[in-house]
Image (spheres, rainbow, N blue to C red):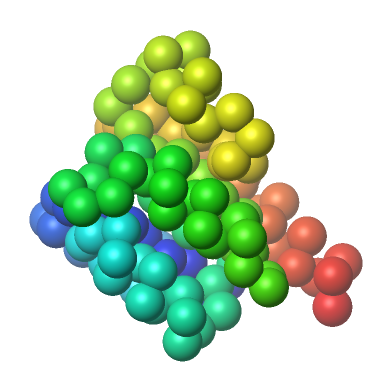
Amino acid sequence: MNVLIVDDNEAAADLLQELLSLQDHTARCTYSGMQALEACAGEVFDVALVDITLPDLPGTEVARRLRASARPPLLVAVTGLSSQDAGASEAGLFDHHLQKPIDFDALDRILERAGHRSSAAS
């Protein structure tokens, strides 16, 4: 599974990348919305974990642009906001929502479902 991590907290993003690599996923970190969009222009990702509060573009704008791409990844909102508070701004943009700190069991379930989705699409 090829996973894009979009988070301006570099330490948190790098740690998540390491954890995903230990689970045999390929993961790439970007630390801004523009970096994420540039990464997606040159590489196909199965899943994008997008922090909602980024310094340059809101995570919702990143999701909107990725959703419009030829092969959008499964989009997962990652935020410190509760799902109810974040829900209004994310309506229809994200496939899943994870609250910080990330519940890794929930992330594993999302990645497993994404793997099945990718297999079915192939």
